[in-house]
Length: 311
Image (cartoon, rainbow, N blue to C red):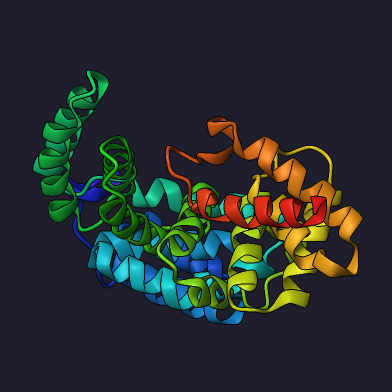
């Protein structure tokens, strides 16, 4: 088995006591430096219970958990101890934690798994995604969810328009690192694509809208609209359309027109016209090759409203 870096081929050394007058984190790191990894994990874990927002402690516990117990245990640690607190971190802490988890979950633990991944990369470079997927399936099984392998697998599945398989791969990648924005956006969009609107709402329950990306909030708005939560949907849509900068998916203009409806037919008309014009451009509809909102289903509704108004 391959274990990363210089520390990974060493065995734990027991019976070495930390010098007196050390803080708990210093003692934990002392044992880590002396390769008594189990003692270090125990002390770092105790420290983290007292200081749950200490990013260094989170990453050290994660690293030691991966080393000693494997990736499934690391996934469980991330799910129980990191994901529920993720949105409470400052932006700088969130960035550090995301980058740290990305590094940890991208480490290969087996020679064979890494070899299969590297072989798949060569196939991907020449657009041979079918053969790449065969190798990636093996790499993911051997590595039990290595992020590099999962991310490349999702890209191959998108190339082949294997949307259900890609969705499963994205959800697996999200468990490894729930802080990775691109993955989270794709997961939420996939929930909408497959009609799981309640899951989107549940995933974003209690979230601070200011911390969500345009793509996350768009998926949220569509989910709320489909669940007949019109007031909540309108608040999200109105805010998104008032913001400058990032491109907006055409579906937002349809939602605005529908939610205004009879309240302001003139405004609704403008939104519907914008929707129809934007929906004619495939580049505005597709997100990573997929139209997560089935935009074509809204076109007859917008056209009917405009036709009725003309009458």
